[in-house]
Image (tube, rainbow, N blue to C red):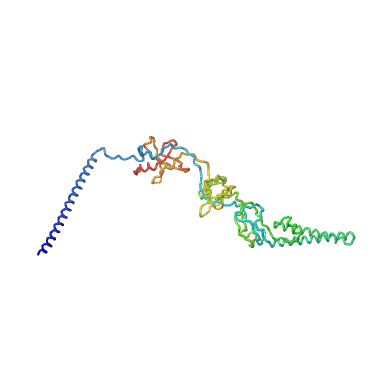
Length: 411
């Protein structure tokens, strides 16, 4: 019995607690709603009171006009519009190359097998300096002909001397003497022709004379450098068989004291460039250096795919700092400078519709926006074609700040 009463009591106690909790929650909700309603009425009343005051009516700002406070003036710079010089220039890119008028592919004059190479790539050579030697079968034949011609001349000379002796003692007929003279003269001509044939191979008079006296064939042909310059390529090794004009040439030599710089000019700029115009160039390998030259050649055609034409400048490179393939940037002066009113780039605003505007002031507090038309650009300044007169007070820095204010942006 006691256990049943205890259990009943626990259920009653639990039910009372739940009811008290629900009653407390309802009381809190009623309090919150009442406070919110009172606050809303207070806000509405305050709003109505503010709206009823005629002095609080907002005024629409004048379009294109901004008034700045003293603090805001610190964010802009004002100055008088001035005239500046704008050079007429066009830009292009290109690369350095050898002066092809002073570059040579060195071939042997006759076919043969290379026996020696004397110079490596990158070395400087003088005109006439030996580059390689070849063993030439054509030279061997020429030497043999020379030796034979010398022997025939010796023989005919002895025959002529004896014929003269016999003729003096009437031991020979006159016609036989004349034949001996003819044979000796023919031998002299043949020897001279043989000497000249060997000389074509580059043999000196002393070398030819030695061949004649020693009766020894000299099969080695020395191939010299045709110009003074630097060896830019070597495509041969001892034992290679080479022939005249058969690429690749054993050696390539170029005069590097003068270089070509070839510019690739856009098709639209080609009519503006002419031979003799001044050019300024910079190369990545020489930062801070400006190279100056003149246009020496304007291409006669335009690439149909790239729509660019060739413009060439010759540069004297006494210190041999330029190398073929170096990237170069060009500035081509296409005319006399233009003097015009100019504004700094930070004084010009590009509007959303693509138009350009500037800001003007008379009292340094009230600023008016005005459309302008720009032209050339140089050294951080824009040429003003229309919209600004020299001497007018304009914003030279911070024009975007004014534009944001006029367009309702944050200051």
